[in-house]
Length: 118
Image 1 (cartoon, rainbow, N blue to C red):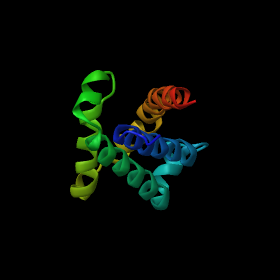
Image 2: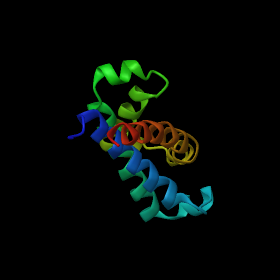
Image 3: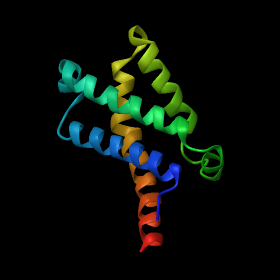
Image 4: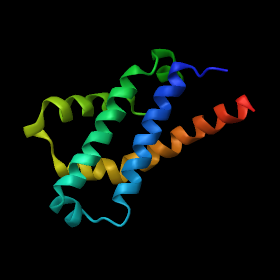
């Protein structure tokens, strides 16, 4: 059975969340602030989250209003087009506070879809 496009986009977001969580394991704000490569990697994953969240269907977004769809998409725009306006401290807070929560929410969807396919 082929997967619905929303499942694919949710998987992309979840995978990017997982990469952020993994890459920041053991990091502190100070170590993150000093590591430009780490910053670039986290920002890239946030761009992927924002891009994929904008492709999730309106019906799915309306059915799951507890997820901050619009801010994810807006963050992507800032990260891509507003390089000078990127606030690294805000990136850190989103990555360490919001991304794990989002990942938890999306994993629940993925597990449900996996169970439905079995």
